[in-house]
Length: 219
Figure 1 (cartoon, rainbow, N blue to C red):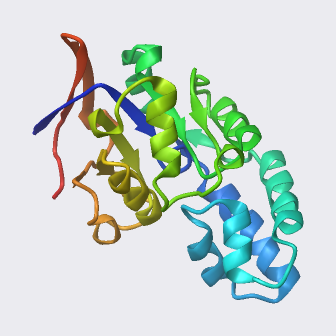
Figure 2 (cartoon, rainbow, N blue to C red):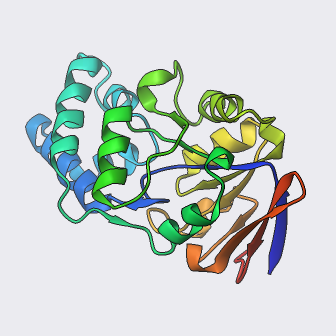
């Protein structure tokens, strides 16, 4: 068991709050098929990156913005199988609304759609892919998330499911807890710790801050 004192929590969306892996993989497989690429390589590249950056990494000579728009539109329309990560709804309900935000590699339209489809509340503050200049692993998304919610990033706790997001959070100065699923526990070893499930996470106000109690922490 570990107790972490923080001012606020910054959540990634896909793989942390919403299980969208089936939708993500369906649409990136279609992208791979359209361009004659290895689907497994495409999928591994896509997780944790903004869509436009994924396209640029995979196909640096194409119009990345145009291709990303196609993938994004298809993802927004594909909500089959979207569900909340176990325990996510309960954890969000236990937090004051001004003490958490979503920092995602998806656009605002996509994140809003997925949160709604999974039955989760919309955050008061969100940092989506289309509102930053540099996506994860750059620290900009988490620096902006902390600023939006009104706290120093070094006092924020981040939950992430991807190595690029962990690098982003740590570069911003935040403590970060990895959520295995999209990636293995070994691949998330850059985090300060790992949690098996949000069922093992409890949050309560502690003076002017939050006390986050995490049971069964996996190191």
